[in-house]
Image (cartoon, rainbow, N blue to C red; front, side, top):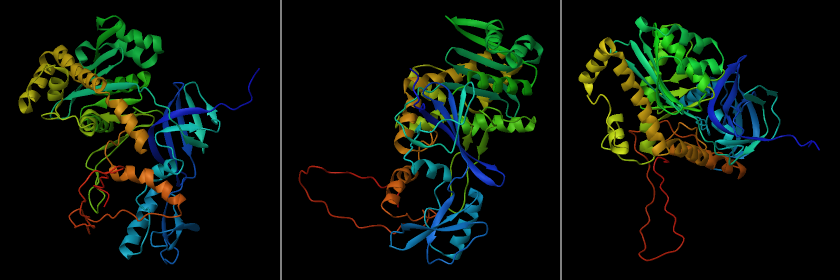
Length: 460
């Protein structure tokens, strides 16, 4: 007997992006379903908005004002001000702050707002049916969703690059389950036949490119492969192809965004290549923003369908203390291993450049060891699982290991709205300005039941 009940799906969100289409913004969430396939969930009419007092005379071009049944903390009724794009919202926020009008929740992104109002943290349950099914990707548009307790086993790909001080790309090493590959700039020994298999053929031929190429069997079914490329462009294209076919959920590394991805993005631009390591679109890097209170101290990577996790940030977030957070120190203290090159500073750079000129095989081993050490540390300390659980508890994206205020907003605001209130916008005043402070109660000595200890740091 065939059931007429529509099938429902559970998934985990790996990437969140806003794209502009025909002058308006759409939200795109991508990730992995519980059956192993991927999903792409598009929201075509997101609520890009903040709130102003109903008595306010503030107006802004191309915005739409609507009366709603919510109030500010002081009891004043509010209206919602809707925008077509986040850029327009930001311009309106700047204008309203210059003019000194009160406003509410102008600091909440549309990507977060859409999820939090549906109580979707990181795992999502699709109630409505997908609008289109492909072999490995299911597409939803304006889906009915709810929260889910689905916990994925993320597929990790660790990579590391080596380069010169002058910006020449030497090699890219990849380590993941069952594959260890070094893509080396080595025009004198270019593996043209294997590269052709890699770039143009099916999956079985792609695997054959590494097994029949310049490979060494290190254990049953696992090979270390040295793939010689004729130029930097070929190194990059082979890397993009490897990422596409391995199809990981998460790219991992050590200072992976601030160094490796930044370098590769810049090199791709120099060579006229799209930075094609995502699913259905190139990746983009967002540099730190400074000024008027909007400060992000680190680079961000937005890769369609994938996330990026940095080993340094996750060790710190998990309160794992090391003498310092260099990969050499982490490998020694956590794994009991030493790197093949233990030099530092200029001496390390000189040795890497010497090996590239004189002994590319040794450089390939060193490059591959770095990628493999990161993978070992992630597995030993369950760092990917830690990031998943933190995302499920806070609602923040997988790569946001910090953000206590944002996590508080994610949990608090949808419940506040259901009580009939909106919150004030977080001030963008300089951190050098003093906070107003608060009342401190004197403690009463003794033993008490049901004591809650609340840490409100960063929530002023």
